[in-house]
Image 1 (cartoon, rainbow, N blue to C red):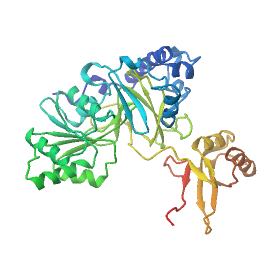
Image 2 (image 1 turned 135 degrees about the vertical axis):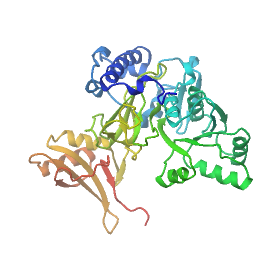
Image 3 (image 1 turned 60 degrees about the vertical axis):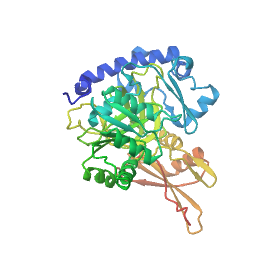
Image 4 (image 1 turned 45 degrees about the vertical axis):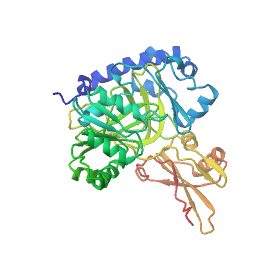
Length: 414
């Protein structure tokens, strides 16, 4: 039996790029024609001219942090769906609240998590205890469809009632689990308490929470394969682990960019930045350059498992680093504005600290090429942020590669 979900996973770089750029052109044309938000935001864009990733990078981003505002001004989905609400399969409300659509798709995999489930080892004959929520949010449905795409059966456990879940898993001889990373530990402990046998469970597919190394090691010590996925309720599957466990492989149905927080500008390979995703195959919800607010970085090379799609390092923090200084909010977009006014700056961050009297101190640290006029930069900082700050020019390579453009070091515990 093949190790791959389909032949796309082993495409050459050139073949994948050509396929995805053709899909991008079709998706942008669809969004312009049928989704009012994109008809406006992409006005004047010639879809056929999108023949490179550089051309994609010139398009505006849609920020997840703005979704609620868009949806309130143009309910229910902010004008971003290409399918009328009445023609969708399901309508969800995620925390926020943010409203999410779900459409009709062949092979029961509208969210495209089947690829991730297959990489984790799910096959026909498996029985998956799906412990993601089925209530108002799409996670339960996402992973149910993923299991079906692999031919597996699903035990729809949902969240909570651990004793009943363990009883169902034992009676139905579950072979796999999908849910948050921390819950399997509670399930196995409850099984011991009840004297029930869960030894048939061999595979854990986890997401929607941090998978700490010690947690994964505990599961591996129990003889379990534990692999993580990365996705959102808006996008579905973005990237997933294979059994090689070397980074997260990006889904074939998306283009993932890593951009400098507060901008839409891609960063060099390996530099940490914000994850921006374009959906290529979702004809109901054609999100173009959707900024997730998550930080990650592109990894060099391809996975040892044989899948050739680009890889990212996984979740590395949040890109929305907005902070309040002396009563004023300072945002990543303002740091980007400061940098844009001084071409000598190659990298910058605002560092917030406090003195012994708990008074806020703002410092802007910059890497620069050539001579940088510190006095003029200080004027720019005050103009953009309405705050005075100290300027420090540092050597290239000095600032950490952590995606931060605002570093709040204040201690709020005392």
